Image (cartoon, rainbow, N blue to C red; front, top):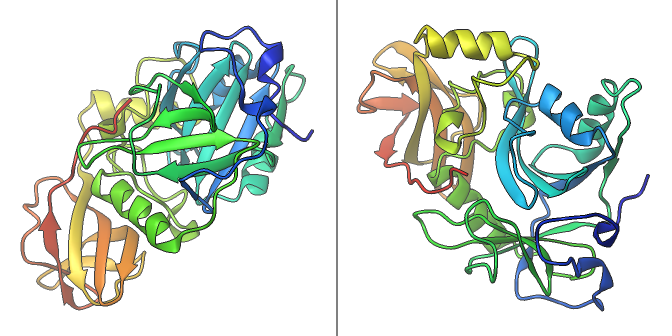
Amino acid sequence: MTYHGGLATHKILIPAPVADNLSRTTVSGFALADHAVIALEGPEAVAFAHAQFANDVTGLPTGQWQWNAWLTPKGRVIALFLLARVADDQLKLVLPDYPADAFATALQRYVFRRKLKIAVADGSRAIGAFAPPAQARAARIGVSGEGLELDLGGDGGPRTLWLSSSAEASPDPARQQAWLDFDLRHGVPRLPASQREQWTPQQLSLDRLQAFSVKKGCYPGQEIVARTHFLGKAKRGLMLFAATGEIPEGVMVRSAENDVGEVVACSRHGDECLLLAVVPLEHDGEGLTANGLPLRRQPLAGGLQR
């Protein structure tokens, strides 16, 4: 199924959608080429997503979005994404970095006879801008001339993410890099392939984004997540660092002669590097190195939880 929105045929609680009826326009934002959109649609789409993903989907009101994650049965994060409930029976998933075809194919294996369709939304583009949204506020989805808009701003300033099947935006590597930096500074782990299925939600500090639930019913990995939460066994979490030099993902973080953590995401600017690493929660972040380079701890910004 090729998905082009079709929102006008659904009863929704956000303003009447216009994204599919726009003449094609070029917007002031920039294409988020590393983001993909997947659509889940049908009478059992919400129930299916609720059973598969780590956050509470049935409790998400129509017209709002949340951070969410898909986990392995061992409670490791396959992917972190934005989940928008755009209609009572329709969801859109916005995946940074993860190949959409592979994600949709893997998710399809669990549909069985449920009444829903899963498809890569080839006609829905992800467009970013470092500007306030016109209508969206926090978790509430808005509708603008460019399509559906999501408020991705935080303490570091405003950002808007548009999902549009009609508007166009040009690639802008510098601003796309700035978008990645913003994510890392706010504790959004942008996981490359080598870091998928390696970490629990607690180790990636996804509680900062309110991206998982310990109260909802079963989902893959739920037992591990709940046990870690209720027994207080989360020993590691994310810290943000800067360094001068190249530090790739997967490099160990060291204290003196001991490995104490691992780099899970990074952004490079010439000789400078911004990175997120999983380290012991009790560590103060001082005196650490990675790839033989000293790390300078940076404060994590807030305001991206939804």
